[in-house]
Image (cartoon, rainbow, N blue to C red; front, side):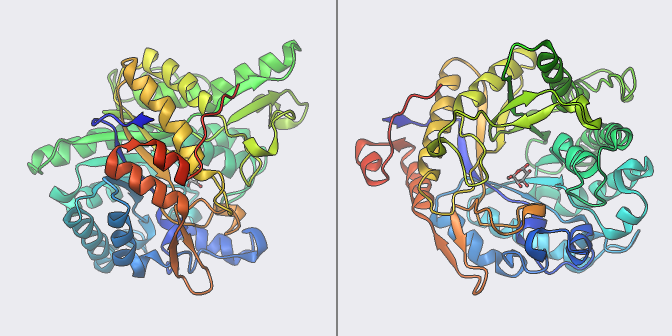
Length: 441
Ligand code: GAL
C-alpha cells in the first residue's frame, strides 16, 4: 500500500513543440524540413494539440490531474522579430482559462528547447543578445497571462539543451563537439534565467497579479556512476558532474558563474529559484574516452541491467537514483522541490504503471524523511515528438494514433488517474494493474 501525502500534487508535463503542431516559424520546423528528425518526420502535425487542447484538457480532467506543466512556443508569440501575434497570445490565454476552469493549476515553461527561426538565424544562445530577446518575450508572456499564471519555469534543461545542440549535433543548428559554444550558450542560458527570475517577480508584483509568484527551473539531473576503478574513469565522472550538473545548479540557484563560464555573481548573490524543478530519468555509467568531447566522458548503460529494467530507448529504470540526487540536492539547497519530469517510453505499456509506482514510493519516503517535495509532473500526458528521435518513443499516459490523431487512455494512464483520485494505491489496485514490490540495486 502506498499513500500519497496531501502536499504532493500530481499531474503531467508536455512541451509545445512536441505536441502542438502547425507552427511554421519555429526552428524545429526548419530542422524537420532539413531532414534532421528520425525517419524524416516533422513537427508540423505532432499530436495536433494546438487544435485539440479542449479534448486534451477534458482527458486531464478525467485523469484527475491537479497540476499541468506546459510550455509556450516563443515563435507563436513573436513569429517575426519584434512583432507580437495576437492569435498566439489569445490561444494560450484560452488554454490557461480552460485549465483553471477544470481545476488544473498550470506551471508555464518559457523555453523548452525551441525558439523562433529568426532567432536561430541570429545565432540563438551563442549570441549574448538572445538574453535580452528572451527577457522581452518573457515580459510579454507574463503581462498577458497576468492573474492566470503565477508559476513559471524559465528554462528547461539548459544542460541537455546545450549538450544536444553543441556537442551531439541532435538539435538545431547541430554542432558536433563544439565545446566553446557549449559553454558560451550555457552561460547565456544561466544569465537569462537569473534575469528572468527577477523580471517575472517584478512584473507580477508591480501589476498586483494574484497568486504567489513562484519562479524556478527544470534541471535535468541524472545519476552517474563509474564502471571501473580506473582513475581516468573517475576523472571523467567528476568532469561530467561538474560540466553537466554543477555549473548549472550553482549558476541558476545561487547566481554564481564558475569556470569556464566566468566568475562571480552577474546578478548579485541570492536565491534565484523559489522551487527547484528536477527532471529525472535514469542512471548512467560514465567511461572515459579519448575523443574530443572526452571532457564529458562517455555515457553508457550498465551491461548487466536486464531488459525488464530498461525502457524502449534502452535507458535503465533506476528509481533509487532519484532518491540519491534529491537527498544531495536538498542538503545543498533546502528549497521546495518539484519533479518537473519523470517518465518512460513504453510502447506496450507494460512498464509505465510500475515505473510510476516505484518513483512515487521513493518520493513518499523522502517526504517522510523531511525533504520538501511538492509536485510530481509525469512525462508525459500524450505521446509526442521525441525531438530528433521522432515519433517512435511513446511516453504518453495517453496514446496518440498519428494517422487519425485519436487519443486512447492507456492502462497506466487509468492507473495514474485512480491513484490521484484516491491518493492511495490499494491491494486491489496493485492486482488490477499488476504492480509488484520489487527490490532493485
Ligand atoms: C527531457 C525533455 C523532454 C522530453 C524528455 C524525454 O530531456 O525535457 O522534452 O523529451 O526528456 O526524453
